[in-house]
Length: 337
Image (tube, rainbow, N blue to C red; front, top):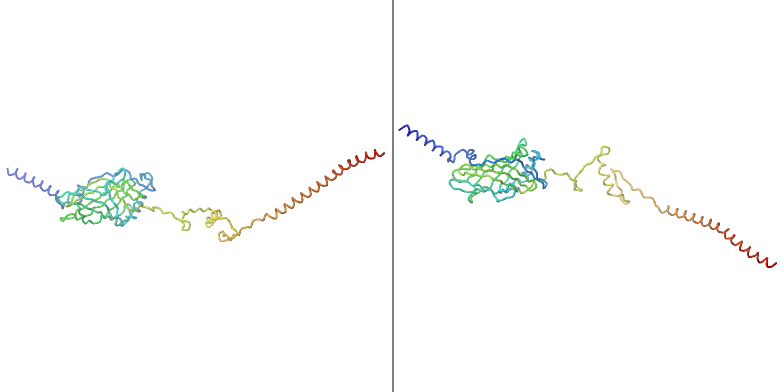
């Protein structure tokens, strides 16, 4: 009987020890975070929007392009607040102006809200494998705002379809007993470079005196976009893109001169230069003297023709007068006889 009683007491003690370890606030933070943080699956593809067009990144973009685009987007928004909201995964439209999580603070159930995050610092990691971020989350619960430390976050761009933002956990003073560790995992599946939106599935877990967590789809709205990604060189005078066209047989200085010669015609008042050489406009020949000579020649030929015509018409007139005179005289002589 004593042996059975001692065995039952030992079993009861072991069960009590297990229950006390699971409910102890000093339990390992990483293990508590794994218990309360829901698991999420990574998206199959990442959609990137640029120049008002959206397409899966794996079709036309490389890992380096996405990495540099995220670096520009986050660096342009340094020292600014990004708004967080629960959104629809299909339309990428916010359904709430915050992200809410059911938690338990001590023995009191509560709801934790995160509505914005301040991007304090952005830097590229060695080897261009990740981005180092320092984020300050605005955490509130039951109308209270606890004091939280900045979260040291890493953005991993493993390939065009696997982009993850996560941290090792940041602590918040939510109770008088001790600090609560909050761990965030953000699997990105949507990047809008035109409007500064980053969307994805999130999983947030709390461990410590306050525990709980939740998951869903979140949208991060940045105040600035990612441009300029690739600046275009422009000339200061014309403010137009520079397009150099150099032929192998012509020096580089002569490439811009023919374009000016086509647009501007030579004038008499100005003296143009062509590669440092003055070009004087050639005066056109006067057409007035030539036209006078032609008119004089035409008048002389006309007078010659008129004189020739006059000489030719004179004998005809004489011949016409002679028969008339002879005919007139002949009858008169015959009548006189």
